[in-house]
Amino acid sequence: MSLLFSFALVVLPFLPGFDGFSWHTQRECRYSSEDLKDIEFIHRYIYNKLEQVRYNSTLNKFIGYTELGVKHAEKWNQDGTADQTHTNVDGYCRPNAELYFKNILWHTVEPSVEVLSVKSGSQRHSTMLVCSAYNFYPEGIKLTWLRDGKEVKTDVTSTEELYDGDWYHQIHSYLELTPTSGETIACQVQHSSLPKPKIYNWDPSMSDGDRNKVIIGTSGLVLGLILSLAGVIYYKKKSTGRILVPTS
Ligand SMILES: *[C@@H]1O[C@H](CO)[C@@H](O)[C@H](O)[C@H]1NC(C)=O
Image (cartoon, rainbow, N blue to C red; front, top):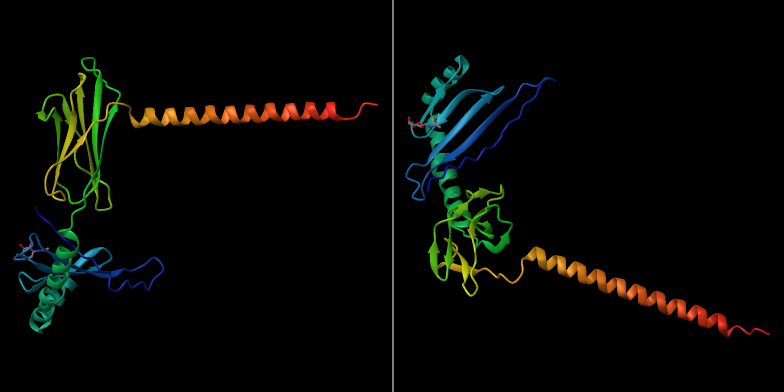
């Protein structure tokens, strides 16, 4: 696992002119493992999108990238600014990195999984099943198809692990098959949130889509019956009422 965390902080957006002159600085804490052995503090000074000077804690030096930046770097490397800036490694980066590992990076969230049948595109097989795992964290999951407990490897395709953009991921694995009656088809999920592999059986009785159609159809029928019944009662009452009106 390789992690790179940058925490950007715009310290001074400074806009004296209408079209804008922009001056900002960006602080980054970079590290790739939990032991934080390679932790690095970077502080960039950027004027109009051009990086002028950068502090790099690994070198404990400022490096200038423009004429002005070079002048600043020379000065700051000598007057103690570099050493002063270096204190951010232990004062700012390390405690934050530890918090991130403790509170976020080592958390796990179990996926919600469903196994459904979808239309098969192939001629060879009658059925295509999809095993979808949603909203798991972190990345790194394994879906395996089991046919009566034995792993199936042929006619299996899968998407990549897709990033949802909100820390969570999803993945979809497809199995094409011609089911025989009595067998059990299952999707096995392995993920760091689960102490042991979890198995989700496919329920061939009815797909969710079919079930919804039946529910909607039945509700429509019931509603129709109620309305016609109400109509009949109303009509009966009205006609009875008319008869009740004295005729003499
Ligand atoms: C900081 O300096 C080290 C050592 O030269 C280098 O490996 C690293 O890439 C530099 N980091 C940045 C962001 O410039």
